[in-house]
Length: 419
Image 1: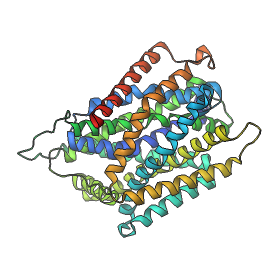
Image 2: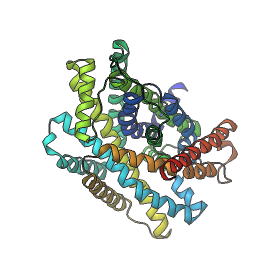
Image 3: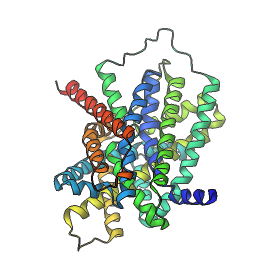
Image 4: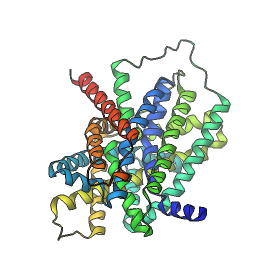
């Protein structure tokens, strides 16, 4: 019986790892490192709060797919075409900026790892073509296998660096260092951008539902609700723990030292890898460079797949009747091409302003989070789901708290920015 449970869980395992890989990229390696570098451990409470209060709305993606056999995007159509159109508009806006931000950072680490910094924008083109070609050829099956390998590498390497950092201790601070205030306007705007993608954007909860359905199709095994949620929780917990690891690494290496991380993607990648190796030892360079690129490549390819799936499904629901169905492979490939070209144009226009690109994408995500949270909560508590598959009382209470939390910070951002 125990062996059967293990076999069934392995058949279920996949979407949670994809979620973790999506989250660990920019929000952890970039934003959490910057949080530790600029504020030490002062923002740990905000990071924990974002992980806690966003949890229900990501969990609902996996829960809804298991309970209904359809994605959250299909659920949005059940609420009304207005919601589907709103999600479609949000997706179009966010998918280009988010993919561009992830792509710019990944390209930087790619150039650093292989010593091709002279390639510049051509490295980004090569990366996008490779990601799209890989997904077009193998789709979910290849993605699932690849992401498990990448996930193992990034988990082991991050924990390895974290343990070494704890053993060595923080770098000495400058004698005249004055800790920055987290309550200044600039600091609060950074905090909002940090929480916008911590662990990732709430509107990407639709990806959980799409990946859950795709895993069922791939394996031919319909997991129980408990198995589906166990897979998701595994990925979510790993993501939350690693966010704290990166804050610690940023704090130990940079806080109070007077060293600032550059904004351009290539320089940022070179600086981060250089900081790790100077801090841990030159012998670790190839390990750190490979781990950093693996983290970002896993995020990049998962982002391409997630946006392509959500864009494809939204178009089908909006513009096609039930009797007319696009060739799934053709629609998916077309979505990948649109996303790749659009994201490249964003990177081309923004140039080397990586920090601005990341903050813009994360802020957009944070502002639309309250609406997505309300709609996801409404779907999993609707009559469309059997009572035994609906969230427990504690999770409903956490959902209400999360909606208040997300709405409060969104309103505060608008107040600071425009009033």
